[in-house]
Image (cartoon, rainbow, N blue to C red; front, top):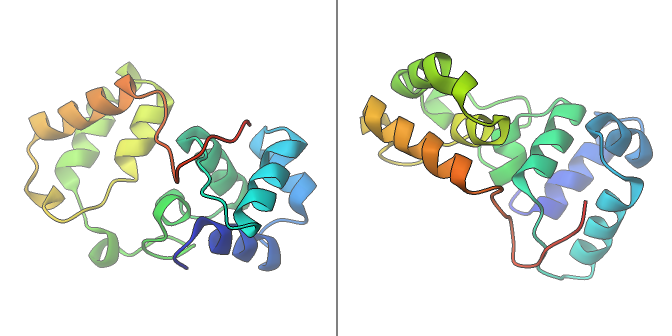
Length: 146
């Protein structure tokens, strides 16, 4: 599933959630947050959602956060060979994660890209710091209130 719309619709039709209203309530979001996003996506608009919103929706639907944000892997979680196993990153998060905002730790934990297996502890600390400085990662082009 390449698009955010496809992933949202998959969650809604896969019985991961009872219905849209229950999903947003479980995620701690307003009812209109997902409805407005879906409406705009279905119209073909470029839509941004905050990473915190996407993470909350993914967790409430019990799907892999990385998959929900990017489409990489699978809804149930990519295997380490699909996503990449980053023991250095995991050590940094275990050791320093409590010192960073939750959105930053979640963003770094969901990272997966070519070359990440070569990152040092300092590289992962830098990624945590950058993620903490950005209040949210945006998906798409236009803001949607949540």
